[in-house]
Image 1: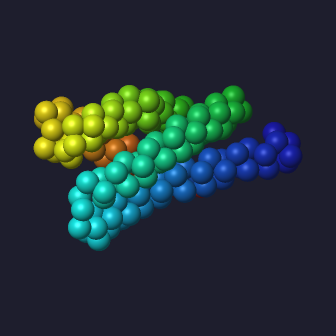
Image 2 (image 1 turned 60 degrees about the vertical axis):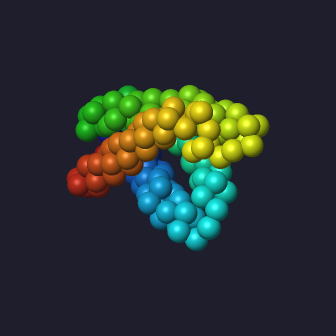
Length: 165
């Protein structure tokens, strides 16, 4: 392997770890710091929920984009025979699936239920949709927890070994 190829490979690996680490950091910051702070700071839980929903929606779109970028990088690394990224590719595919389901399925469905409740003049927790909304919220929260823990595991696993060209 030439020095230029080895340098490029090391650059791809560092870029992968940097992007993955920053993204996982954003998941933990949003989910476990920003949103709880919003709910603790605002008196109106409906307003806090709407702000949190907007933040989670932005994070979900960001997650889809990051997972696609990581998938492209991991495929480039695997093509260059960096074998320890083969299992990581499956993790990224699961993370992409979770992000897509959340972004294009759960969040829009929950937003629609919230809008229907507002049209009735009540918060979603006092609407006929409260039970369904609660189940969707539980699924969404569970997927977010899985996503953040899988992302943390992925970054931890990649930083265990030195970057090898």
